[in-house]
Each structure stands twice: as structure tokens, then as C-alpha cells.
Length: 88
Image (cartoon, rainbow, N blue to C red; front, side, top):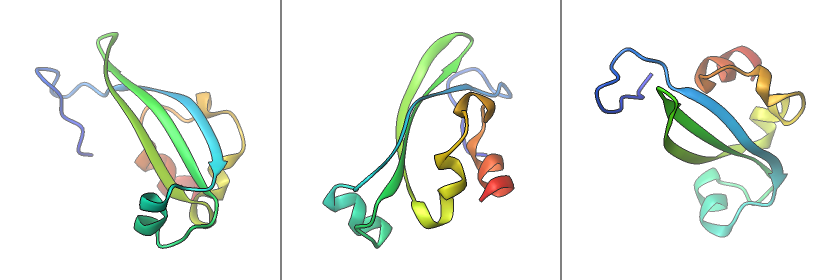
């Protein structure tokens, strides 16, 4: 896990998915993904000690991450990489 922010060493940041959708990626994202096919876009907010510290947008290739296109993101927990390993 790579997340380190300020003086909160050892604290796992909280995570809240703000939006999840399957959409056509913009040209630069399609180039990075190697495909212009629909992709899974996640927008989430990370916080530490109740303070928002990071807003991020992730684009994931739908064929590999289709399992995350359904269900309630509130059930995902705070860390995405273990979720990816478990469900994708």
C-alpha cells in the first residue's frame, strides 16, 4: 500500500466512493488503457481524521473489473487494492 499523508503514519485513510459509472473514456485515458471500449470510472474521496485529503478518479478496464460495476460501493471498505485482488 502506498498511501502516506502528513503525520498520520499507520492510519488507514477512509474512503468514500462518490460516483461509479461505465462510460467511454476520453482519448488520453483510452490510449493509456489500450482500448476505447467502455471503462469503469470511479471517483472517490479519501480522508484522514475526518478531514478530506484527496479526491481521485480511477479508470479501470471493464473486462478486468466488471465485478465492480454492480453492487453497493459502500460495502467495499476503505482500501481498493485488496478488493481488486478479491473480486477481479
